[in-house]
Structure formats: C-alpha cells, structure tokens
Image (cartoon, rainbow, N blue to C red; front, side, top):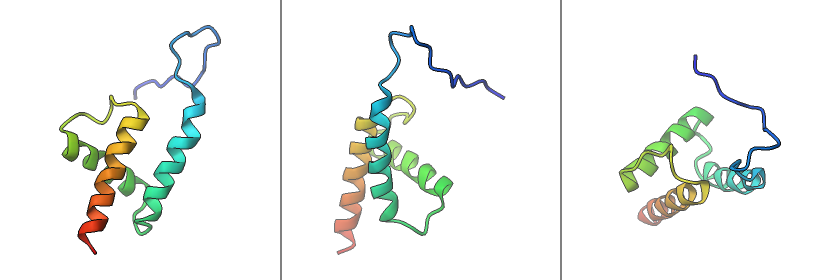
Length: 83
C-alpha cells in the first residue's frame, strides 16, 4: 500500500492553498447533481475518463481549475446534444 502524507507541514513553501478545495468541491457537486444516478466511484471514474478523452492527458497532473473547466465544458456539450 502506498503512503499518503496527510500532515500539513508548517514550513512547507510549495503547499497548495487549501482554500481552493471548497470551490472545486462545489463545482464537482454541481456536475454530480446532473447525473444523480451515478455512485461516487462511478462518477469520479467517469469524470477522469471524460477528462482524458477530451485532452489525451493524464488527469493526475492538471490543477483543479483546468481539470474542472474541461469537464464542465464537455458536460455542457453532452447536455446540448440531448436537447
């Protein structure tokens, strides 16, 4: 099992801003509410796959805003296609 560091070190200069998390979670919630029949793991897996299919890039590396912007745009296009 890989180790994940959960402790935030006070002197770590390159730590990402924790204040970005609520916005990212709100954006994910908005997307998930559009597909409420999906379970959490299913939704997350589908969003990762959607990001890859749109960008051909590994979804592990983009910052939240880039990742979510791609996903939001793709979901909007899918919704327009269903009208």
